[in-house]
Image 1 (spheres, one colour):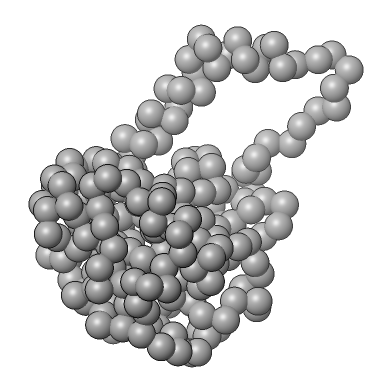
Image 2 (cartoon, rainbow, N blue to C red):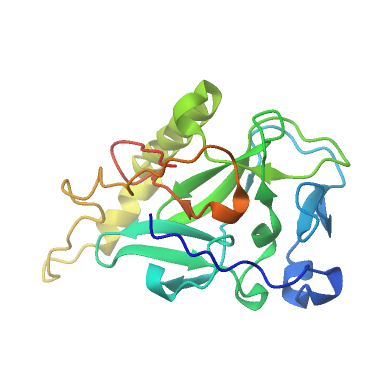
Length: 225
């Protein structure tokens, strides 16, 4: 299924990490060589990180899938006006520190899961992370009740914020009788669209592209592998 097989050319080194990435690191983490892939830099906890901590958004160039050279450092997000677009952080200069979070090889290793909120990708901690542990992500919402519950919690929080008196006042103050009507951000036809699933036998980061829909703007949450 439209896999880009071009691999990362060389082993990443700390000396090559852009300054803006280092400046943007939260105090709870640091960059070191990864334990799950010796060719890559990984993100490691330096302090205890509580369950439910949210990091992000994932930063990168917005591109069409045909423009992406490597599918390791990207997510695909559906935009109603643009279709499927890639947030591509293959170039470290275009990304942030979340680019260096690697794939988990098993459910036991996974301590982060991805979340799309208003067309942006965030990572949220699935369990407490101790100092000295590497941050590792996977997207297995379909078969993990804990992740499904966390997603529903995020959706409930988003609904609560949209219905708050402050939000309603802001909406009323921004309305003008002469303003043209705006189309909804997610139409009924697009709300449940998802990328076709890929049949994979194992968690092989080199053969995965990070595409899924888990949108806080859509009425249904759909995970795709």
